[in-house]
Image (cartoon, rainbow, N blue to C red; front, side, top):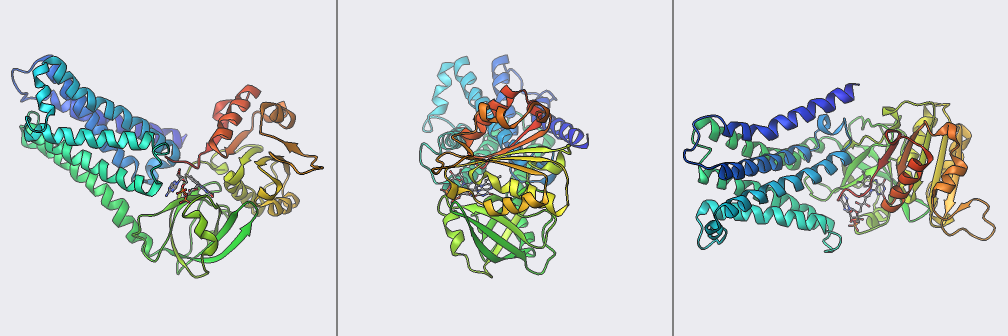
Length: 438
Ligand SMILES: Cc1cc2nc3c(=O)[nH]c(=O)nc-3n(C[C@H](O)[C@H](O)[C@H](O)COP(=O)(O)OP(=O)(O)OC[C@H]3O[C@@H](n4cnc5c(N)ncnc54)[C@H](O)[C@@H]3O)c2cc1C
């Protein structure tokens, strides 16, 4: 209930903020002699710009904002909202030109004025953001470069748009109207400073060091961190943190990983990290004592948020890590509730945490179904993919009212979601964690 109220509260604040500039346009003194379509075009521009401004709040990782929904939902919201905002901003010059085609010259930097040049620069930055985000993988843009350029282009788009608004001067003709836009610009820059300077400064007093790096099956490594002169970090099973491995918390490279350790132990946290690319391939070489920084915990993929008589966990590959945290936490809590774990991987050698899962079976009411895409000769368990037939075999009707937690590669999550729906599971009972944020 509190989460619903909190969600409602933030959505109301969001709508109020986004609609504020359009409302302000209606407060006199209004520019005279303006026709409907010009006013309409400006309304689209203000509506889009304020939405872009709100994006800075969404990405600033405020726990009060992310907690009711989970950060992946917030980032999804950010993506969709930003596209709506960019579309609204594109409509702004489009109406102006359609209303009077001779204004097309404003889009030519040589013929226009400074107000139109800044508008053009802002628009180009926004289009670049949309293209590099929507087609990042196809354009083969490295994630870290994308992230840096995303931030730089976002700040540039807003600064140029603010310059355009103040130079156009039509709706900044009173001190208080100007003040609102200036406060908005300062807030946006302030939020970037908060995320990139103030937060790392706070993290400086909460450093961690590598205690151990343990090999698991399936090119996965358990990274064990212990706090340096502080009590540690409280988290809920299933949550994640952004890890920076560096002597300074000001480094821009940080990667999100789910906690794999028990939430009952805040003084020693573990992550199960699969070798996938540049950063994850360096984990195995980390020496004990190496300094690290954690930003977290984040995420709403938590059993503690959804009390139930029992759970069904469905994991694919390294998507097992949050489930391991669920199981370890439940074992430490002597939780008697029944659990069904369906765990799909390529081969038997990919079954990360297999030995630990078998140990946990002794402590929990845990049934495990291993699914191997390429089973060895003589394998008597399930093979292939997690299909609706497989789920029908292992999820009897009395289990379909339980909470389902699903984490794995995107194609598997889509297929499992469809299969669960076909089985009759209500969508509000299905919780998914996506390991790809962009
Ligand atoms: C909420 C969440 C929890 C996760 N938990 C785990 C886990 O428990 N174990 C695990 O092995 N992996 C986990 N991941 C995935 C992990 O963050 C990426 O595999 C890792 O960042 C890849 O970095 P790389 O440089 O090795 O690979 P790259 O080859 O550089 O990147 C591969 C892909 O990983 C993603 N990625 C890369 N860098 C980042 C970054 N800095 N921030 C966000 N995404 C990035 C991008 O989608 C990219 O296309 C999780 C991801 C998310 C979002």
